[in-house]
Length: 336
Image (tube, rainbow, N blue to C red):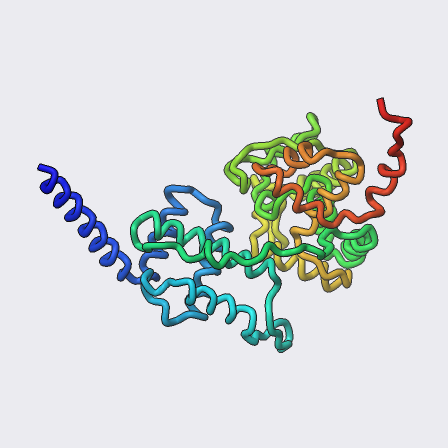
């Protein structure tokens, strides 16, 4: 009887090994499409998150064309991929050739590919995920991502001087103050509906359906933001706009598209001379709130983060002078 159970166990073991080997020879491209469907329909991840996975896999496939199946994914293979990322020549901007990438970029590729490899391993397509053995060092962030007062004033000045008509002028001012005063994300700005802006209650509602965190949250409207929102709404109503979306496009009564938002950023960059990206307003909001005494918990709630560690990343732009006043007030004599 013991021999029978041992034999049964051995057969089961070799069957699993055979199944794993058969699975590991499936084409990686085909499996990635399955993974994207899993992320889209089962996990219901945001399109921006899925696009990040797609971009990472696309670059991996381009740099490592010989990696066709999960069985080709090894520690050596991944080390070679990260080496290629670091040493390849790439053309950016107006023909400028660069070599190397930021440590944060390497970590981004590692993280996004690791999500796919974990899925492969969990479904029996990959025997062992090699990425935990080749984890890059955590990047040290030294870049200043919050916009300075001078940069914000130049952005506002560019809107004052270069708007094509009154509606665009008031819309653009409302957009800048919305982004800075609430810290909302790009997708949340574009998805904001007229019914989500309640000036009577002084609240903006960010719907969970459009938020990266999938959680609905409400944000207070400051007096200066209230002023710019009212001016924009008044001009919008004068023109008889009926779009359910709060931020309308340059071309008429419709929502501002993703392409339109990119054009908006590029136009203001050109007119203001400030090289910025839209997400920097979110960093600026976080740092400005911290400077006036907001706690990490309050920031987490306002920014819609599920993890406090993510909130802390937005405070990297705070320097020594930002905490000097508070530290100058420290005294043993003042302790309760």
